[in-house]
Image (cartoon, rainbow, N blue to C red):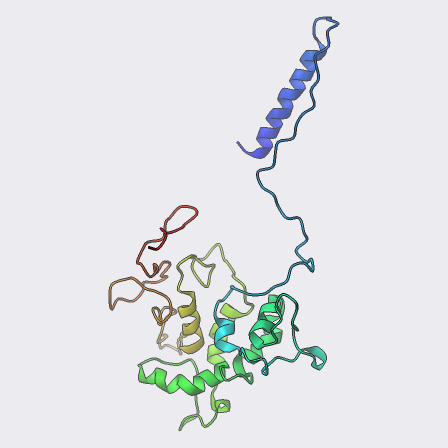
Amino acid sequence: MNTATKYSGAFASLTALVFLSACGGGSNDRPATTTPVAAASEFAFDSTPTDSPLFTRVDRTGAPAVGTALLSRATNVTITGVGGSILNPAIPTNAFNDQRDQLNRGDPVNDARDFASVFVAGPQPNSLKNIHFKIAGELRTLGLTPCSTEPTGGAVTNADVNVDGCVAQAAPVILPDVITYDFAAPEGFPNGRTYDDPVVDRILAAALLKLTPTGAAPAPHGLNALLGVINTWNGPAGVACPAPCRSTGDETGTVLPTTFPYLRPVLP
């Protein structure tokens, strides 16, 4: 029975009781009246408006590790905002002026405007261009195909590295830094996020490897190509995580419970 039906039934019973009392056979005795007592609420909700200055954003978890991987923690490497002032300046609850905390304090609706170019080619040593400049050769040595390209003869500086392909496939996942969900598509990161999704490994694959086909040639890698680099995969040794790899298990190999609250046993 839904809430509306329950209340409708209650009001109907109360109305019938009132009419029956009014037609009490001519008796002068009046029924005793009682003051109804409101039922205690099962939940207590904070009614503070979401845009209240009492709330401040101090961290993000939409696409975890993006700020750690592509932005600097050094306080001498910051992002300039409109008018030359520091972007998303320090606040009492998040008093650090570095790129990562500037991202954390920012509004996701402004992510593409404020951080896209910094992610790709900012002054920090771990910008996407610099990462590819440093490790693209090692990726090829491992038999992997990076999503970046270099001129014939190799890159002399990180400015020679073209990461347009990486940006095209990674940007929809990390900008804006929020979780999105399409009810018509299979669940699992980047479409929503289940408890054991290998989120970090998939973000790494999108930022580092070529995942899109070239003409008639198939894509050299899938989104699960780096599974096990960071996230745990407890499948058979040497067997890749099957798409869409919705559950990789945890370090103990314990399967995730299928009922709420989805908590595994306490670790010994």
